[in-house]
Structure formats: structure tokens, C-alpha cells
View 1 (cartoon, one colour):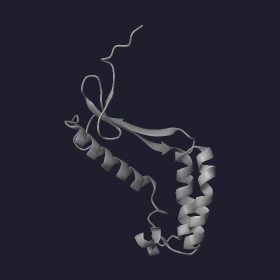
View 2 (view 1 turned 90 degrees about the vertical axis):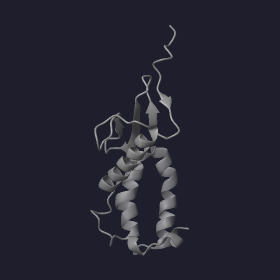
View 3 (view 1 turned 180 degrees about the horizontal axis):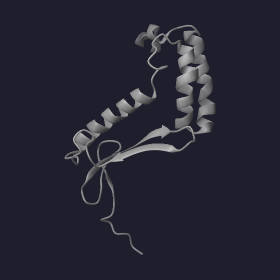
View 4 (view 1 turned 180 degrees about the vertical axis):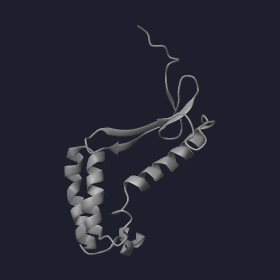
Length: 137
């Protein structure tokens, strides 16, 4: 049986922004995995601000970027917004559990030693606010 070519979703120049076979613009993004390993996804055909359908792919991409930034701010806060947190505590208690949910176990096990080296470089007691972009380079 031949597939109907009209029932396809086409990609746009923006990642995670698509047009369906009717020409309706939407975005669909995977935000990682929850504690049970189930994917967290968001798909919408309408603006989250106005509730109107997207008019352009650029508009959909801008909303997507805002949505992802807001989601990360809400779900990846540093110890409830505590900026006095030590870098090692952040890596061990916040980042690594999140990272483990977003990658395969084999990838996590291969990369884990890198985070130990980074913690060793910065030291156990260095606070997040003390790390500069020069240190990261």
C-alpha cells in the first residue's frame, strides 16, 4: 500500500519547529526524562501567550525558546535559588541527577569521571557565584 505524501510533517529551518500536512505550524520538544525514565515532552500548535495559532515559524521558534528557558528555570533551580551553594554540591545534588535522566546510562557512566575532574579543578568549597567565565574557559 502506497503512503499518501500529503500526510507528512515537514521540518523548518528551526529545530523542533514543524509544519503539518495542512500547513499548520507547531513546535514539539523533549525536555528530558522524569524520575521514572519517561520522556517529558511539550507539543503545541497555538501560542502559549495568546492562544492563537502560530503565524510564522519564527514566532513558533521564539515561543519555544522562551518556554524551554522558563521550564529550565522552574525545574533546574539551584537548591531553591540558593546562590551560596558549593560547586561540588551543585554538581552532585542538582546537575548529575538531571543529566542522568537526559542521557543513556552508558553515556552517563562514560562521562561521570569528567565531572569528578571538574570538581577537583575547582575544589570542593568553591561557591557557584565565585566561578567566572574565565575559569570555565
